[in-house]
Image 1: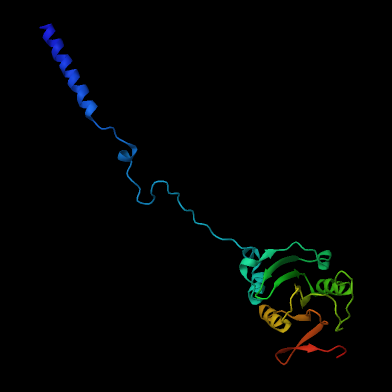
Image 2: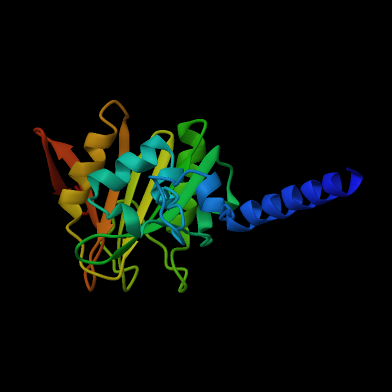
Length: 213
């Protein structure tokens, strides 16, 4: 009887091994459901936001960029040193940007009062450019090989320069719109190859002020 029991047990073991051998092993694809979002070997795409230096400018500086029609993607902060940097100011910003015509450097300094503004402005006119040329009030004189514009408010000085010709009147009108409530003290421009021009606002229009008048 014991022998019969051993034989029966052996048969059962053999049959069990056979059934396990016929079973198909499961893969990870059978265990984990397929993803509908990503296919095999696909890399998830991360959303990226383009950052321009324009975004780092102050709201007023951004308005200046917009009124002068500079391309936002071309804006770069500038570390250039200019004479007003030696005098007292509350804050300053300098940047370059491209218009349809040329690259433009724009700088602005903010002051606590008009005395600080005038001090920085007239000291610059006493020694302008590499040649340290001086300019008297309302004088017409060639100071630079580049075009430039001074836009002087009571507590702010804006300086614009470019190597290309400049539509000074259009630029002045744009800046005036940007600061509708601020008192404008002086506006000077010079285009490439020409002398300085002083501007005044008369009868709702920006016109040239002649030397000695």
